[in-house]
Length: 281
Ligand SMILES: [Mg+2]
Image (cartoon, rainbow, N blue to C red):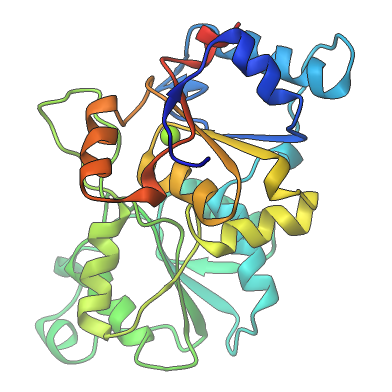
């Protein structure tokens, strides 16, 4: 039964894996935290790989084993028809690198301060590139009024695609007393102005599920997702018929799970939980 949030031990974990062909691991908060691997996570991944393959192995991770929002963004762009060739990006370098590697021309790098424009330009006609056929909005530490204005004006063209690579409201908090806003705040600013909703890439959205299905042809009933966020990782699994496991080494806690249960967010409730992956060794 789904959503029981049952604590799992190594014996139960071994039993569970007998009915699982695919394990999807979220990364930050599950495998690592900042720059450091979470204690026991690498060993647990080795163990899972050995059990799935049925032999002892040394795990080697390839780019093709990793699902990243930028990679999904690129594939979505390749599948949709851009009426004009360039992409205006409010986003971080990894997203831009992925676009560049895939042959997309992008603009929007770095800071874009209003002091670079005349008052007339700023108020009436901020210079726009006529070749922009898509706007991608992600996390951008240089986000400001000029970028908002440019995105809004590119998106006046209804044929201009509007994509965001996640809708997380905050980053994880290394300092619990400090809040770090993430992409959703920027997306809300843009959508408020343009009155359009973006295509959202990333968990828990269908774009990510479609990407995984297309590349690995998984059977969701025999797939387990392990994550540290109930509203993204666990919801992704619940929405798409997978088994779900929360680890408490990242963002959400058992107190959060209790809160979600009281709010009747069944789509946020995992089947299992563990303190961290290494507890299952
Ligand atoms: Mg995470």
